[in-house]
Image (tube, rainbow, N blue to C red; front, side, top):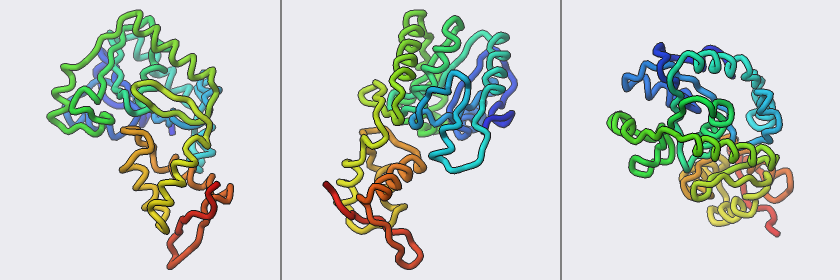
Length: 254
């Protein structure tokens, strides 16, 4: 999961920090040849007690994939490039938990460096950077914020508070990270399913993506599937197979 594939570009004056390969590709397609570091941490789910050891092995529980979740080498490579660069620029959002937490992570580890941030929501209130088109990417460079020492320290303190909370699920609410237990949205998902009625699992997931539980906060499909599967294990959703399609329907709501 974390390898040299997470690094692209050539110019080292500015280091671009993104949370997905799609954003790296989007920037490259728009002529950005700076060194780009992609950190697909999925920071919105899983306890973060190992994050200071640069370990995200908790993700095995949710992704169900046998990948390498140790990103120490990638972080060390980033530190090496940062020592030669003039600026770190983070591509972020006040709506997307993963993008916002990546900003906090960078400010925690490099608060003595020159850091700037570009927020996707400053162009038509977009949820994420990869929601922007080519022209919008060109325009949003003008929205870049150079962080003051006070701002970097504020973000650093936010990061420490989130780590210390040791919760398993996170979401953005009015620009603030909320850390909650994994069952926090159980009733909301059950209510949504009750309105939809008998429905394919995939359609339920897509409904939760297209109509987010929290306004503008979209979880990845694997997270929503995990939350649904937990409800099945609790006996609150009945899983049946019809015509080789997994069906989800309300079993019992208390």
